[in-house]
Length: 232
Image 1 (tube, rainbow, N blue to C red):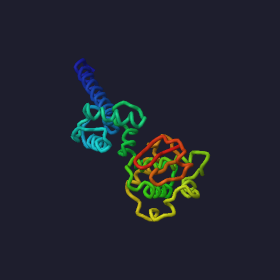
Image 2: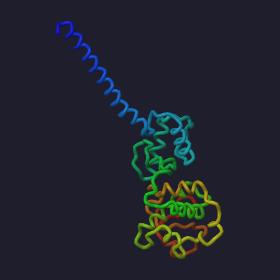
Image 3: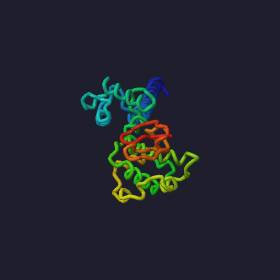
Image 4: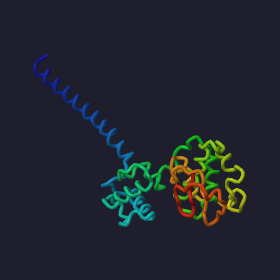
């Protein structure tokens, strides 16, 4: 093999290596950066439809006063921070999965966490009957109380056991039980199952305008959401 041929082979091999490296580099770039955008969080500097949804929700809750323009600027970040502080969750000004869940914009369609579809439907039915007319947060709160009871030693350890426990929920014996289940209640049931507890651990709740029971009124109130007092 003469020197000219050797030089040609070296050039060909160098080019091949360079192309391979470029291809590998593109693969790494795709894995790192395209994958990252798939799981992107809304944060300062973000724009788009999700930011608009966040702004609209925060505005309805009284945390955001600016324009619903889809731009995650200082006002939006400050509103998210205030909302996070109010909910007692991580305060970072970023609308991540937990914050979106608490806003009612999160993982309503995620896993059932061990509950059957029939149980989820039952939870939604109770929420719809018990929290009709309440805010979305108030609906999730009712679902959270039911789930908190399942985990508490003083109550049955199944969802149906808690719901149908004698005297626990008056709605199972009145006309509300037979009304159509609200779509918001279905979402609220899943958000409660996925971990959103606006009450901070309550196992009781009551409407002071409708409840005269002295024992219930003696319970320690830890949160007020809409018409309901949530207690331990």
